[in-house]
Amino acid sequence: MDKLREECGVFGVFGHPYASQVTYFGLMSLQHRGQESAGIVVSDKNDFTYHKGMGLVSEVFGNESLAKLTGENAIGHVRYSGTSEAKIADAQPLVFKYREGPLALAHNGSLVNASQIRRYLEKQGSIFQTTSDTEVIAHLIARSAYDDIVDAIKEALSMVKGAYALLIMTLDKVIGVLDPNAIRPLALGKLGDGYVFSSETCAFDVIGAEYIREIEPGELVIIDENGVRSERFSHNGRYSICSFEYIYFARPDSNIHGANVHQIRRRLGVQLAKEFPVEADVVTGVPDSSMSAAIGYAETTGIPYELGLIKNRYVGRTFIQPTEELRTRGVQIKLNAIRKVVEGKRVVMIDDSMVRGTTSSRIVRILRQAGATEVHVRISSPPIRHSCFYGIDTSSPGELIVTRKTMDEICEYIGADSLHFLSEEGLIEAIDAEINENIGENGLCLACFNGKYPTDIFPDN
Figure 1 (cartoon, helix red, strand yellow):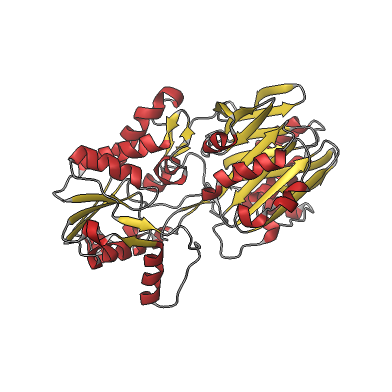
Figure 2 (figure 1 turned 135 degrees about the vertical axis):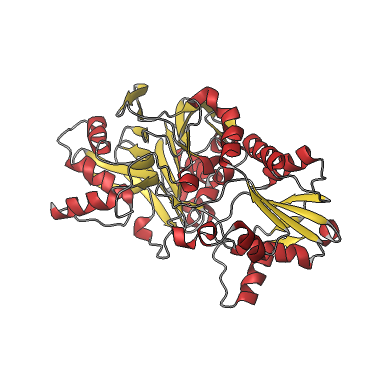
C-alpha cells in the first residue's frame, strides 16, 4: 500500500516474574509500528538471554522460545527498516559486551547525524556490525570515560541529533530516554510491583498496566532496585511531536500526551468537512486509520457514514506483482468495495494521507467498478512535500506526487471527481485543541508538510 511506514516500536519491563511473556504481549500490541523483525532481551541480573528473528511477533516467538527467556527485566522491539535489504543483524534489541557488563538497546527513531558519527568512529578504529543508528549510540556509550552507565549515556546523547525513543538495559537497570524534541512517543506505566515502558499506551491496556505519564523531552527515566528516578540530559528541549503519530501511525485506542488518537482523528475529519464540504450520498473511510476521520466528516456534513471498503487482514504487506493489472488485483485483495453500499451513490472517500497517489487511484477505480457514480477524495492531512529524517520511511521529494503535479493534475491522475487536503492550519487547530494543555501551543513536527525541521539536517540526509 502507498503509505508512510513507521520504523519501530519499543517495549520494556522491569520487575515482573514473567517479563518475556509480558513483553511479547506488549510487542503484539505494537505490531502496527513494524512488521519486518522482532526481538526480546531478558536479564536475570546475572546475564542476558535473547531471541530475535525476521517476521511478525507471532512468527518469531513461540512457547518454547519464550520459556527460555527467563528473568524479571526485559526490553523488546518491532522493526520496519524502510530499506529493501532486511537483515537479521539489524533486528533489535542490539546486544553488546560492555566493559561494565552486557548492554542492550532498542531504538525508535532516526539520528540525522548518524553517518557522520559512524565515519568518525570508523576512522578511530570502531567496527560496526549493523547498519542501524542504534549501534552508533552503543559505540558512543562504550567510548565514554564514565564508568557510571547513566553518565555515559548522557555523554553519548550530547553528540547525537534526531529522533529517539530509546530503551537501554543493563543487568540491573532499564532506562527510558526521549530526545530533546519528543518527536517519537514513549510512556511509563506500572504493572504490579514493577514498571513498563511502551511506545504507545494501547500496550498498557493489553497487559493490565496502569499509565503513569509520558517521558518528557530530554529526559532519562532510570528504573532499578531502588525504584524510579528521573534525570535530564538536555534542558533545551521543545516539544515537536510527529503529527503523523496522530494522523496515521498510532493505534486509535492509544493516548499520546493525554490525547486519544481516535478523538483527534475524528476532529481532523470534522475540520476537513468544515474546509471542504461536498454534496454526496455516503461517506466512507479507507481502513483502518481513516475510519475515525470519516466518522467526523460524516457527522459534520450530515452525510451518512457507511462501511464502503473492506480490508483483508490476512494479506502480507509485500504483495508485489509485475504488471499494472496484477498490482490492481493485489490492491483489491487487500481492499474491496461493498457494492450494495456504493452502487449508484456519490461517495466521499476519506483517507489520512497521500504519498505517490498510486493506491488512491486504484481505490477510486475499485469504487467506480462497484458502481459509484461520483468519488470525491478528501485527505485528513496536508500535502506531503518533504522527506522525513526522523524514523519514517518517506519517498524522496521527487517521488511525492504533490511535488510533481498540480492539484487538478493529481485529481485527474487518481480519477476522482474532486480532491482536497486538510490545511496545515486545520491540522494544527484539530490537534492543538486536544494536546496543548499538556505540551503547549503547536508542539508538533510538521516538517513533512512545510519543511521546517525541529533539528539541523545534515548533508548526508
